[in-house]
Image (tube, rainbow, N blue to C red; front, side, top):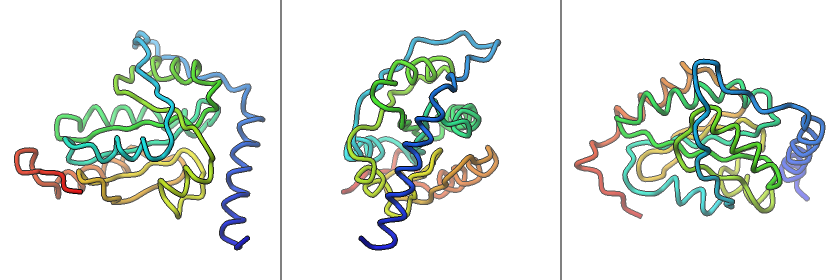
Length: 190
């Protein structure tokens, strides 16, 4: 096993261990000013299905965020992800959310999404951790939260591991949208 592959395996195992020790963290409750919405669809998906959603036509830029209810930095960052997606939706930003919770945690993930008023279909990761990580981004250690930014054709523009500030992500999103062709002239080619 190569040194790089061994490091990735250790990172994935570390996530699993963190999930086990972080299981007592309750999902963040809805803010007092927001009534929880109905939970959006949460489909089980491997990396291929997630990447299909990223590459689907119609967006000028796509932000993919991988998070989990047991991950404190994910819960802290999540309101900014949702706020950013809402702020730039009209300009062509699509948000794709992937819960890294275990499949038996789908109920907690749905409640978390509803508590944040998420209104976009979302996914819960399935399958082998390392296959998922490598298919999404070979240089991704597997740490979450992880945010990926793509252009409208599904080409990766950047990715960030760990909690990011609203300003950092907004700057990247604005640049991607400013450089993207308008909706009228965009035809996604594969």
